[in-house]
Every structure is written in structure tokens, then in C-alpha cells.
Image 1: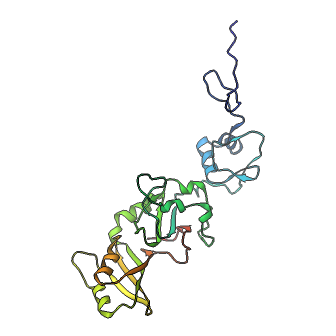
Image 2: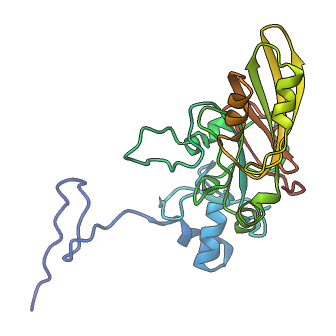
Amino acid sequence: MITPPRRSPNPTTGQHQSPQGMSTLPGERLSKRVMQLKGCSRHEAEQYIEGGWVQVDGQVVEAPMARVSQQTVTIDPRASLISLTDVTLLLHKPPGFDTMASPGESGRRVKPAQQLLLPANHWADDCSGMRVLQRHFARLSACVPLETAASGLVVFTQDWRVLRKLSEDAAFIEHELRVEVQGEVSPEALHRLNAPRSDVPAVRASVNSTTAELTRLRFAFKGSHPGLVAWLCEQSALRIVGMTRLRIGRVALGHLAEGQWRHLQAAERF
């Protein structure tokens, strides 16, 4: 009789290995346990888990490949796959962060704005009613550029419809910015800011408030044009000390705190 080779412990983990070198992990996949409890397919079980509907010993676990053995696995009675939609996140980007850079991007000294999209930075006053899930931070696309030195509203989305809207209709979507410049702005300088030019988009500039030291201007124009406001101010001999994007289309920054993010609400449209 041929005796099969004895499995030997893995010198690193102490777990036994099969003759093919595959480790045998204790317990079973969480997705398999949910399949048994819910009577559903593996794909649906993974969706329930990634949707934040599954708890292991009272703690939400969002990883379908997590291993369970004697732990208590429960599924929220409100669990639904209908709510597992792609999300759009709105961030109040602080100055110094690159909107379009990918996390972990190498070769340039950049601070990707996307690295601020963390559960800890979720705005407490988000009234979308959506739960914060790890799946919300995957497969995000940055949609609309904003100067690195500027702050304000930026958009990251998983939703192809939002991405298409902000890409294909970019030239028709209005942007509003608040720009702080040194000193007072004369009527002549304001006229130059609003003067039509054949080589740049039409711009509406107005004075929001002014003091002897600082003037707050509002700019509105269609399309994303990084550098446009800085160029216009330079042409009018105005020195910028701060710039914030307040609105993209019909979606406003509002009271969203700098460095924090919220979900795009279902009723909001760009």
C-alpha cells in the first residue's frame, strides 16, 4: 500500500501545507457562510458583505474572503442589494493637493486629493443617508481639475453617468469661484476682468466684499479652465492670495468643511 506523504507545518505560519504547497487556512470563507445563511448565490453573498450588511461577532466585516469558524455571523434584516449603487463623493480640497493625481502615484512630488477620502474625513452633516463603506473608496475617477494651489469643490465618482456628464458636457457646465486679491479693485480693473476676449471663455466677475487690504471677487464661467482666473487677474495687475471653487453646475460646496467629503445626494444634479 502506498502511503501518502505527510503534510508538514509551514515554517512561517505553522499551518499545515498540502503536497502541492497550498496552505490550509482554518474555518471557511465568510461568503460561503452567508450563502448558507441567506440561501443565495456566491455573488449575492459577496454583495451583501461588501454592502456592510454582515457582522461577525457584532462587528461589520466587508471582506468576502475573511475566514470564520466558531464566530457568530449575522445578516442585517434590512439587507438589500438594491442600495448597492455606484457613488459620487464631493471633497472640499485644501490648497496643495492635486485633484487628478492617483494615490500612490510615483515620479512626481504630489499629494493626491483622493488620499483624503477616508472614513475619518466624512462630513458629520452629510444628509444623504448613505452609510460609509469601504467599497465607496474603490474605482473612483477624478472628474474636474482644480489648481493645486486652490481650494474648493472637487468630484470623485464611480458612476459612469456622472463621469460622462462632467466630461461630455464640460463646456456647458458653469463654475463659480471666490478669489481673494490684495487691496481694492478699481472699476477699471473690474471692467478689464469682464471685457470680452476672442481667445478666452466669457467671464462674469463681480466684487463680493472689499476692504483696504483685501477684495473678494466672484468669477463665473462655463467649462473647467485651470489658470484662466490667474491669467485674468495678472492682466489687471491683481495679486491673488486665495482661490476657492464654490460650485460646479448646480452642485455647491455649501458648508462642507475643508479636508472633508460627503456623498452626492440622489436629488442633486450637475
